[in-house]
Length: 317
Image 1 (tube, helix red, strand yellow):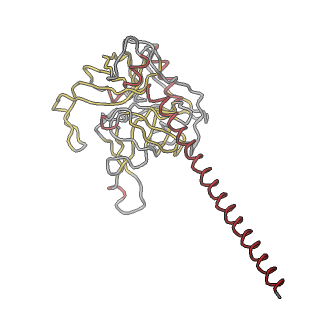
Image 2 (cartoon, rainbow, N blue to C red):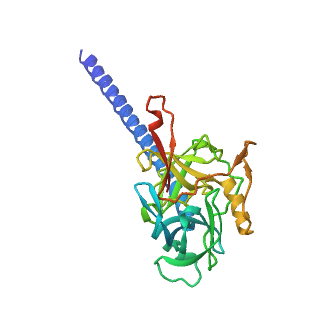
Image 3 (cartoon, one colour):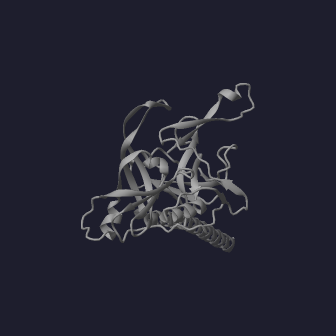
């Protein structure tokens, strides 16, 4: 009997040890899974930081002084002209001081200045030894109002830049980053995805864009939409909104059109005619030249009796 009792105790002790080992192994596996997930998030975070830190130095703020018509609640009074300070965004596309932005950003400009971020100016601009932003007067070399694009030039060299290419493949669902100066806040970044490739914002307008849900806000105009590799996939141009703010319907001029425009504007040619997309359909360049604070109203068929009274605003950002 005594031997039986001892055997029972030994068996119970062995079972307890097995259970303890199993619990410890389970906890260890759970810890490894948690650590693995944390490491994956850190790697993802580092990748995003790398994209932004690579692209941001080439993004500039554009300050415009000029005159324009009075605008009240989206209505323009062309009979009254007042002084219009404006702020927009742009991207350096050549180290010798060539910058692209939206044409409506510099509409009616008497003076255009470009603000280069401290990181870019302190690291790359010759003779700079401080961390304050550098401001340069800019010349408008040319504008294509149809595509809403303008080319600026500042007199400096060795600037950080992002090359413009028409070979960038844009894929629906890929990550996209909008960088610019919304509401005058320099070096601001928002993230989203490419919602659609080559959509038409208006069925009556054959112009196509890159659509994104990355938040675009006023003064984002002219800033780039970049992919995870830091390539420019478009230049942010306008939003569709019923409330006037960002509702996840942002549109950028595609890099393919940007490349054609940029090359032509550098050669100081006036652009006319059509563009052909990679999908082999011809797209006429025809875009409203309203200022960034105005809105063109287009009807949106909603299938209800008051359809003609419901509108979506196309707002320049």
